[in-house]
Amino acid sequence: MSFIEVKHINKTFKVPIREDGKFGAMKSFFNRKYRYINAIQDISFSIKKGEIVGYIGPNGAGKSTTIKILSGILTPDSGSVCIDKMTPWIDRKKYVSEIGVVFGQRSQLWWDIPAIDSFNLLKDIYKISDEEYEKTLNELIELLNLKDIMNIPVRQLSLGNRMKCEIAASLIHKPKILFLDEPTIGLDAVSKKAVRDFIKRINKTNNVTVILTTHDMSDIEALAKRIILIGKGSILYDGTIGKLKKNYDYLRKVKITTKDNIEIKRDYIINQVKIKDEIEFVIDIRKVELSDFIKAISSKISIIDIEIISNDIDDLIVRLYEEYKI
Image (cartoon, rainbow, N blue to C red; front, side, top):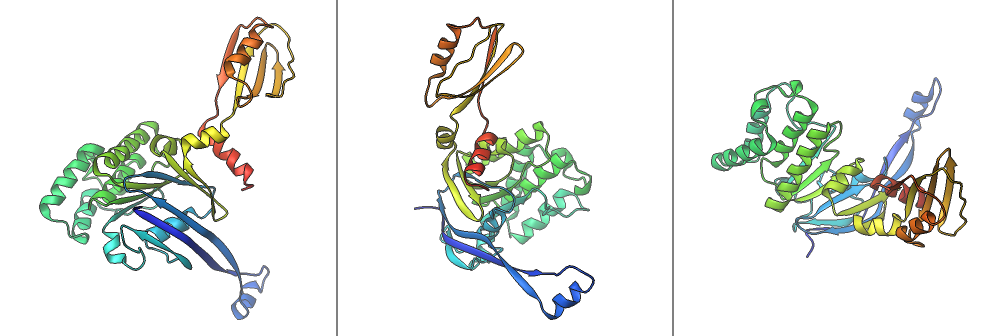
């Protein structure tokens, strides 16, 4: 049985239209018009306990609306959501004690006081026992390396250290589900790695289910085996990154440095461009093995150097966006 079950949820927002011009505001006040935005349409998916899932899509695709519904902030117009046998917006009081939420651009910490004071307040809010709180807090401090920053006001912390504290705050009550919205936004490489390693650790040791929304595809590739791609309010792809690569990662750039001239016309060659001593081929590896292509080329010209360039995850996502015209 799935830990998270989402069935056919829809959400439409009613947005007022303000007319332009000097008297636009007054006219709209007496005769207000509206437009309707279908934020999400017939969204369905299921997630097993302990999974890390990347929930991705372009701006305005409906990611945040979905996450707000899953976290109990919004109620869908139709459809159902069952998470650990609870409906988020109905069983809200009990449900919020089971989840942790981190928004990369919004803070849940009190800005002018040290992080430890925010943690102590969260202890009382979640009614955590002294023994359990001390044990969890010490674990988080050690794993996230927070010892030297606990007594510094949050506003004085670097972005990387603040994000570590945000994640610690979301885990102080040991939630079963963690919603992460752009958790590494603006972080340097060292801080990103620390946050990613910590997420993987709590997922493995505590079996925490993680739903990750981000535009940083390196986060997705580092953490999630499965992605759900949403566009124009609907699910476009739901599957593993491996399957995505198999279906869409079929073009390779082969750069060859040579003094010779060559032009090959084959159905597997999508494009070839020669600039000085470098020839760049784009080939379709569904139609030819890379080794066979290189063998055929080397039999015709003298190769000085060769470079094979694979697509990264960003290229594949862009190709999906182009295919679905989003």
